Length: 167
Image 1: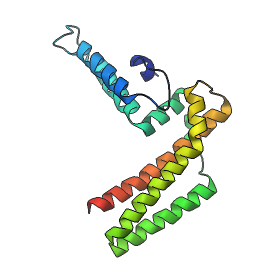
Image 2: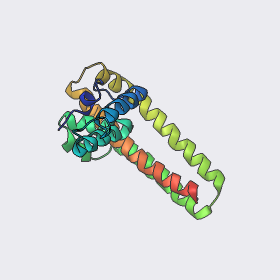
Image 3: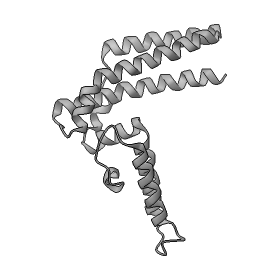
């Protein structure tokens, strides 16, 4: 598996400088462009575009890091029961909102989900900081997997809320 961080000349980190990523992406894109590079290679451009897409999205980046660390098998593990219960309750509230069609309820749910996301980030901040500093022991890596699994669940709920918001 190619190292997309290395491709863009940035260190492997959960939290990256998106401006630097964008700058390096455009620099590499120009160098590979057929007007500049006679040996234009569509496959290289595809890899570059895919790498940029992965690294520019926090959840995809986290999943990619987990894959690089060889922990993809752990991604499908069951959620923490307390977290799952909270998410099920929130999901029920979303379903109630669909029935009521009250826009005020939607705003409350969006804020509630935002609060869950902030709490989750706060809960895993030390783990993220440790990984970013190069401390990549089993505990840190397993915590990253837990963080990813929870973030993925929150993103799904966020998509449901966004689709409701558009209606």
